[in-house]
Image (cartoon, rainbow, N blue to C red; front, side, top):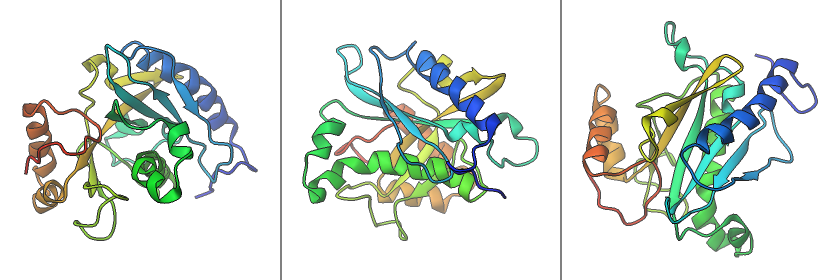
Length: 229
């Protein structure tokens, strides 16, 4: 596979990206108040990834982050699943989570506690291209080598990719240059929840998502929430 790089731009990808950075905030903006901040990536290594960030408001008192760039490269989906070959990632954070400028002013040891969600989103978005694979509903990932190793200074050890529940069903997809882009919600998992999914490769993720819905939990990272496994 020929890797995309900033020195060897692909004109079709560039054209898609230009339409994406207009279509994405317009789409999410139907469901989230305010204008987003864009965490622009100044230097990119194969895939150019930005993150749109909506601040908490009275109506929606949580942070909302959405990747922009994953969908510019069709994922290598199984035969017959081409409908799901383009996606972006959605993650929410508690309203009292520090802002990016606040995190940047922190000592590195403290900043890691709050910066890891952005780093993980970018890692996942790049992974599909660099490893010629795909992300879809029901997929999960772990923070480190073992189930019980967590993200920096966090109690969570993995993420589940499932439907976005913090917004109406209409937020699930949008169109960019005649291509359907799916919004995949990221659900932070405690070690026991990740273990539950991995021990049930056929249906574990579906059951976990059902439990999230019953507990009125949506995609995001919520430290201290009750475990559901």
